[in-house]
Amino acid sequence: MLIRTNDTVKILTGDDAGSQGRVLSVDRAAGKVIVEGMNRVYKHVRRSQRNPQGGRLSKEMPIFASNVLVVCEKCAAATRMGIRFLDDGTKERYCKKCGAGNGQVGPAKARRVKA
Image (cartoon, rainbow, N blue to C red; front, side, top):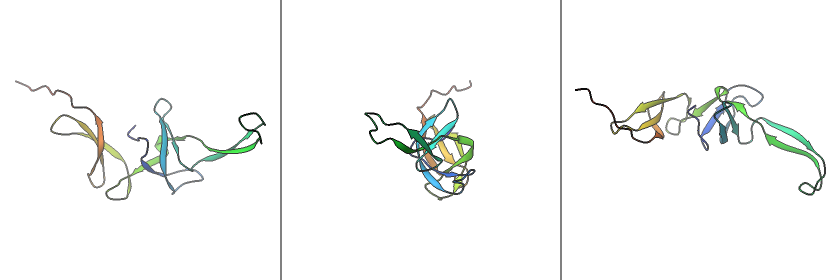
């Protein structure tokens, strides 16, 4: 999954389809992301010391990562991300539409040279 925290994403399906938001957290094991202000539900809570008034709390729920697209910072288009190796051996994310780099994915690794 090439989505990271603080990426701007566009929602493809559901009630919030077509809107954009910032990624708050990523759950790689479940393949889900939580987007700020999107996919909100009401959670009914009873009165307690933590929540003395009780009532309904509005909170964001996770969205499957396949239902969002990362918005490229350079071309401002919702696009898929790809991975490529740079000359120094580091991996970086890049926009599939404009080819602009969007940050490193991993540290440089030693590359084997065929003799």
